[in-house]
Image (cartoon, rainbow over all chains, first blue to last red; front, top):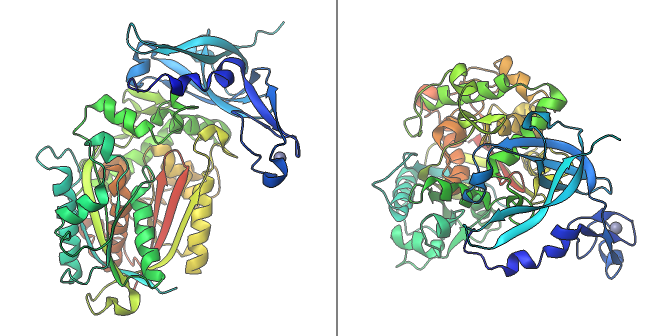
Length: 138
Length: 388
Ligand SMILES: [Zn+2]
């Protein structure tokens, strides 16, 4: 993956940095990443999709601990990856950080945190995005 | 729509084939299938070939023309089409060949599938397989391909009480079947302890829960069913064919433990065949990981959702069970040269229906099913074959 141009990363920055999704004006469903049109309303949703900022909170639907990664993530293994269901509805895939690997559980409440995802070699581009950490009960 | 039959099958041995090139593999499988069918060669109207990622694995695209050339058909100028749908490329190639005959466009076509995965180093093969996942929204964040199936496994264990031992028993069964298949990459048995104690790839999946990196090719000759017996005594009729799609990313699915692409492709195939899951005598299913076989037998309707793990406890899916699954050894033991897999499944089902599966022959095999999945379930084909 090291041979990709940086534009491929740069164009997804609004979503990956700020959790910008969108909402169908017809059925009110929320999508992340944003969609061109709503797969449920189709024609009715055209020109009727509104940008919306998600709160970055959710719950773990399922998870794994990656022990054998791609080359880009070798310096991070073992690391937990989860599917997180966001409060607004969409599900996403992200790393879980700042906790003991054994503490990751289905149903755990998590919130997003802005982190470095990986780096191309020691001098290459650094890629940022969201990871999730456990919500501490107040 | 016309009926379509398989009149010839052939495959290379699956494994780490250091001495054979990409084009040698497909030429060998194609020649074997054509020889088996009894056709001369000049009757062939078209070629369809499944290959997932020849560009990344061997730096060669334009595979349709290459296969026609390598197989000696560049001088007949017949159309040759490459099909890509990740690990379901072979199944889709079968379906395209099937549709071209069913439509009346062609009478005889050769379908091939291949992948040469060992010409790149291991990490590069892993990365190429990960291109079947969503690059922007899964792989970017560190998800691997085994990791996606591992997340299905974690959820299945949580929701239905499936255990790591259930998963391991699938590997044990498929290796036992593979030990009876001279074409399999692994012709050796493994023990439950070996599978459970293997190093972890992505929790809860260990090394022996995963299908290997494999070189290999497979091919079949398809023919309009009413002409099939002119060439061969025991054709196998394709009585049902289905294909379906789903979201590229696992996280966007309706349900993590259900592959809706499998559910929908199988419904389409059962309907065309006018059959139900109860009518199936044996099946080759897409066990790229042990958990995938559990989901497959549920989503194909053989057992209820959540009971796929227990089926192995009750020996239902072993070679001598009520519904033998993956008699060839499956992707797990036979090997998984991604583009070849869907075609190799049709080879195994046909051999079983002809009564030519030797030591792994299923008794009274009349109706068989083949199930091929792309990625973590974004595409799927299901074919049902019946002895003629
Ligand atoms: Zn809508």
